Length: 398
Image 1 (tube, helix red, strand yellow):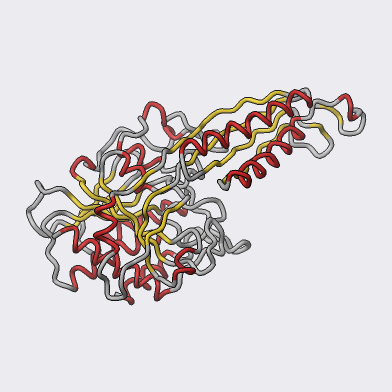
Image 2 (cartoon, rainbow, N blue to C red; image 1 turned 180 degrees about the vertical axis):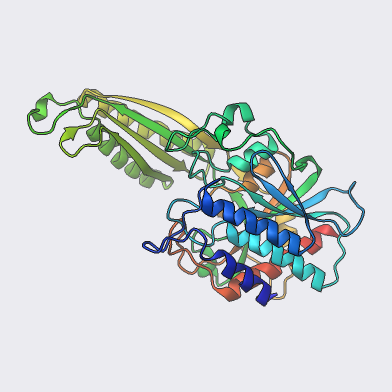
């Protein structure tokens, strides 16, 4: 099992890697991510798994050792895309571990009573078309193709010009349970001294676009009192988001900004900024965003600018099935696994919200850093994660 895992990981490691930053650029439907999709098909073929794809770019490799097609299917896997300049483990670890777990089950002589699928969902990060977990949302019907086809990337390319959106289906109606393994995006498992943990749920979160409008002018000839500078309004709003999040013990991040005309010697006419807001409850997130928006409007009035806020993606809280969590965490060779919540979004949350009972396993991240080249997991912990996933699938498939 160790050799198979390490071989798969060695194949993936250089794909999309930036030599200058040490981070990964695996954006959906671009060359590196498509190379990973080809790798996925090769791994499935090497194991005799049947690959099913849909018109959105999602794929599932099915293991059907018995003729139990009428039984509810079991799904595992994750995603292969990354954020801009991201880490190696977020997403691919779950896909590699899923293939390795199938190998472990075969080595154990397990003959599952129902089909097991290894999934690779596209655009989980929302790094190209701006909506997180877009592939799983489309696959489950949480987002319609009519609404999604017009989404555009930074270059203005529409999703509908990249994929057709109409061909094929993953038949997720036949899936009853989904288990996603993921590198932990935090340090809870480090603090608890455990290689593996079980997720209790996912915090609610959303992405909100703030459009600040002002008046372009000369940076030298325009007196400070005569300016309507949207950059000032944005700057105060970013500080307000930080303050409000700290006061409420929630999360607020402005991580993307676009400026026009984006000249060094020009007062901007427009600033577009995206707020990522997360919290331990849906009302907490709503209150946080409302407080930030209120302060943005107050500042805009003083600056002579305007602000428009658009909710681009909002995900409610997800709390996984307690009975399933309890069954996964108990009675392992190393004792019970710890249970922890996550403030990061995942495909498991989308599937659970659409009626597919879901659970998540986390693998320890010694740095506690994610969405960064510093993201990491030790080889022994990854292999412990594979064993944990295989044991979980064996329990669930009977």
